[in-house]
Length: 550
Image 1 (cartoon, rainbow, N blue to C red):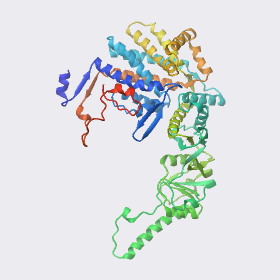
Image 2: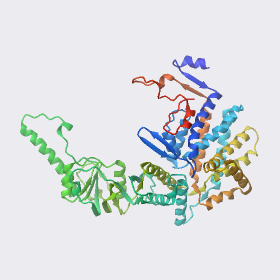
Image 3: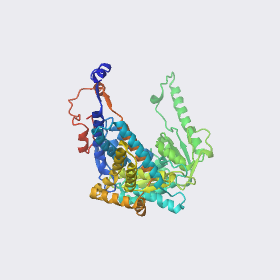
Image 4: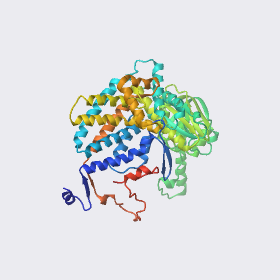
């Protein structure tokens, strides 16, 4: 078959197939899992990832997986499921990778013993369906609770997420901030409506939640300091319009026969921009914001009329200002009516650390919020931003789906116990596969215990004994200690891990053409920068890693 493949494909094509190829893919995934496994849990370790343009310190599973730059096609599946978990629910990115790795580890033993991959896949999917059904039966719905109890539930879910982050010491502070920020969004609940700004300096507890919009002062020309920096009941005009004189050579080529014609062209240009400025000033707006540049002429013009202006705003800041103030973005200065102007109770420019920020607060119908993160080191602030993003995602999901389950590995242990008992009721090879699926779920409490410095085997045996004796009530201990997680996190993690494991197990052949890996152009290097030790070397490196085929 291999000889036939070589005849069909281009010269140099390599084709690997059979059980050996599946095991090779599993080994590649195991090397990746070993890197992120130590980041799981409240006592998990951080990873320092060095890149050409900076250094990242994080224990967020999705960030670590993305920064590793894995190129092995099978191992890339782990990166994809971690990213999908982060986009879908915001938490459980490390758990989904660890569970996938453990499922593949158990499947490897079956393959070596002669069991075919389709039988393993069938058993895994059956076990996953049973686990999801049991998970839904065990979930506690807090939908009928009072507003105070729902808020407490959301805060506890956010605290559980932040437990394993670098900001765990301030988990209550950030959890309350996350709940307040999502509550301000109304029915939309779009996380993009919550802006996160970072300012170096100060303490972590100096972090602010702004009910409205704030953004860093934009680039400004001479005359900006003469403009007023505070308005009450401000009228806001949003533009996607350039208010700047352009040099003629940048715009067009003009041929003239009389020097007076040149002056008439210049005068026409000045008349056009003055017409725009007059129309804007007559609109009644006292705060003018534009996506494009506002030049020195316009800046001085607005300063003389006590109007604040700012140009070159980021698209996200302009959109959140629109949501907060109710203004409509205009692309022309013609036909501006009071109905397109936004309003806010207070606009002011304030100093935050070493930066100046523009604040739009006391908006009547605001549907946006902004979090100003403070901290000493830039790496700490970056990690706080990633942690807050996970917390916001969890609160958002918990507000839509009010069912919660116990965290801290409790739910995995109970699902493992249930699947073991179910496996005893059936016969054949599926009994073994489901039983080992149940054992794979125990990797979460085992890893949590090991990362905390405890004896993982001893703790796991104690948990097995308690779950076997008490059953479901043991999970309630997690509730009493407020270790809560939205059921959606566990459901998504189980489904994604099972599908990823089944996908990797179903790949029995890899076709690779070495010609496609060669650079298309550029000088030939000496080859000193290439990794030659394969994916296994990835586990021993913390800096930016490139993984190749094993």
